[in-house]
Image (cartoon, rainbow, N blue to C red; front, side):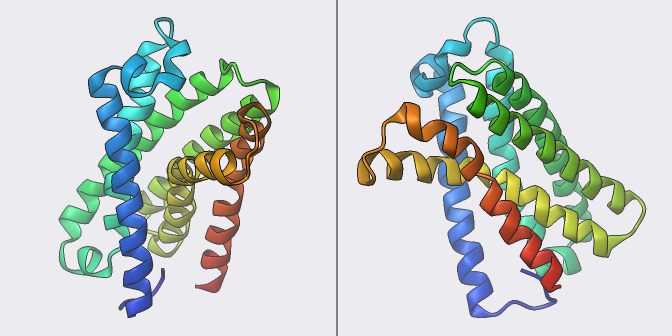
Length: 203
């Protein structure tokens, strides 16, 4: 959503994105606080060997979801640069920690090699795009920083699209979980990247 000022359409898209991010972040954070085995039972097989990584991925990833949308608001960037920088540091740290933990979880998934590949690539690209965004900010190359942030947050939003596709595939499309999940391991982030790249090239 580039530009110094936003249209009503920009604000509408941002508001929907924010509400979805808050919903998924709330689910993830409450799941960690309640205990993975109770709050996110589908991931309970990672316990106890990878309990710390599961808590890091879902809990800290929830922080990235909550912080990320506000980094794109023009008024925050222009009028509150100190807040923008500190939120950016929190976002980068959250993405790197959650992405690293996510890679560990993906590498040990019980959903098979296709899902393992899809989620592992998601974690790798999430870390790389976030690292590039941070590096460009440090270099004061703010145009490139914005582009890499768009790519990074598109991957952060994979947490949202994943939780949209799972019920859609099960309830509406009647596809068995074992069939749908490996496809969703790619579908939850590849279209996001395509949209992000379209936005970046449109700037």
